[in-house]
Length: 105
Image 1 (cartoon, rainbow, N blue to C red):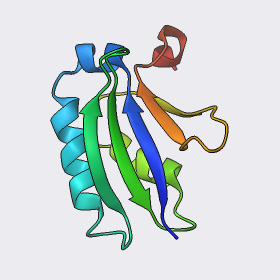
Image 2: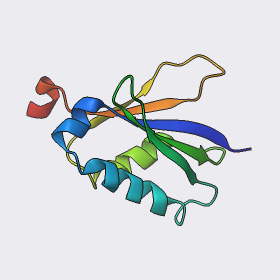
Image 3: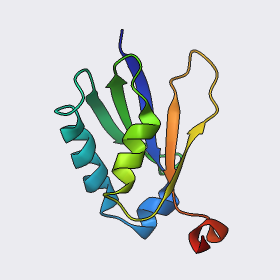
Image 4: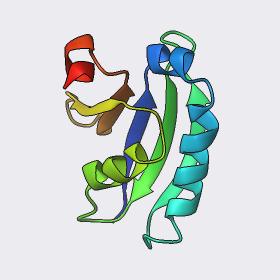
């Protein structure tokens, strides 16, 4: 049974690195060749928040943080975290700019 997850990118990060939208879309579009069962379903921009959102089907036992660690190698420095959601909401992962104190370390 596949699970749908959201990978989100903050408005702030997109403003700092406008090309990451194409980079992330390309990475996720190609990831299915490496991970059977993974599918990029849809990409859209939330008008209310300015966030870009990718809806992805993931196979059971797939760890999204592993995917995000691989993605970090292809995009400018960032941080990611899982957002708190309550069922039945989809799991959400946010990619954002480094905080000033994190950038120094």
